[in-house]
Image (cartoon, rainbow, N blue to C red; front, top):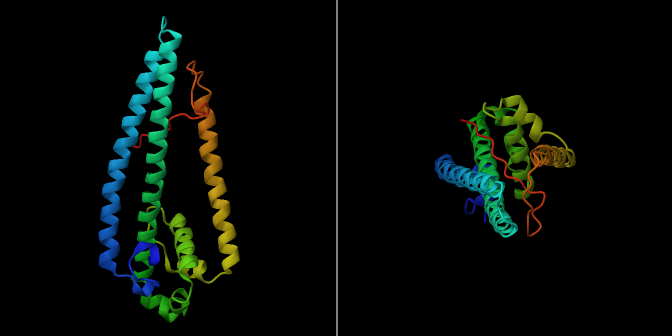
Amino acid sequence: MGLFGFGRARKLQDLKVSDLKKERLTQEVKQDQLIVRIRHAQEQHDGLLESASEPGVTDGEVDAAAYKMGQVNKTKDRAEKDLQEVITRMTVIDSTLDIIDKKQELEKRGIWKKINEIPEEELEAQLQDLAVDRKESEINLDRIVEVFDVDRQAVQSKRSADVRRSRDAILKMRGRKSGTGDPTPASSGDEDKTLLLNDKD
């Protein structure tokens, strides 16, 4: 399929800046759509929880609300997964553009050639690692050199640790949310699922 899905591109030098920028715009549109979908799911979940927890609600009504909440959770989970993939792709594209922008400096240090000798899958993994450090600012030259001038096994080990830390943080937040005392029974194996939405507005 090519590096990050870009046709026949197998190396960094095969990627076109115009294609990268176009793809980033596409991902931004997807991000906005997914955020709307997640917020809508949050509103549905809250409405069901509120109505089902009112005094006088029958067991049948509680069961029906619980089932609907389970379906909403599944929709929200899929949207969150897709959103994370979109965000990751955008950040990787930004990191890739940073590297291409510093091509001349990297050539002087002998790193540009080394980057283009890395196998496709390993290159994708290292670009993803670099994206983790990027955040909102441009990656400096020394950091690029550091990432691509280290042992590959060490890089992969660091990536696995980052994933574990992210997962632990997610589970911790879910634990706090599930401790709110929700009286509504869940169904279809969704007992531990709660809707998480950090409103960044």
